[in-house]
Image (cartoon, rainbow, N blue to C red; front, top):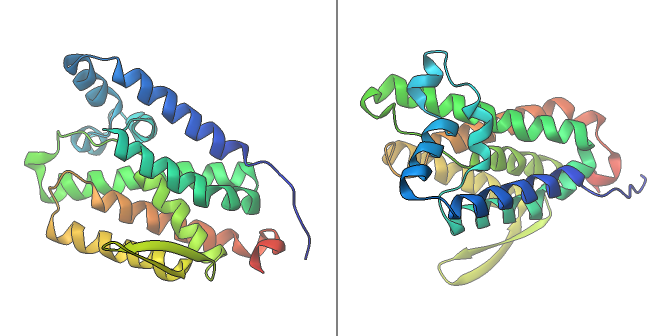
Length: 211
């Protein structure tokens, strides 16, 4: 067992870029905002027809409102720092962006295949990447306590219980409300990607983070 003292640079950089983009978005008119979202968001029809692949990355830096960006960046700050230190910055960057990219692909394939009439509606946000980080945290630190609220009651539970429970809820929502305002299938896609990446790299990660 050994101690590693590193600053999680990638997590802080991602948070700062997201905040800067969100502040910029606040200055836009409704017309310019719509144009931005359609240009840099994930449009399922475009992705599935081999176009606008840049949206799989740029969409991760766009957020719809304050609560959208707050909860995503808070989760990244809370869980991502330890994951980055365990992975190292390069592998953590791969985890984050690959989870986000494949989340967009999952969402696009699902909507385009089952609901083609909705395939020109753009999706934005970093939630797919965040769910990838959450899955990684649950595997690396399964017994760390996280606080969740059941109604107004705070409850502490092991990370693996909280995070896999949230993933299950996302799956149920994806089945019940596939065309809602939240891209639940993207969350599931990001979660599965993060889980697979972590299981692949887990054996070689820094041992300190398994105590």
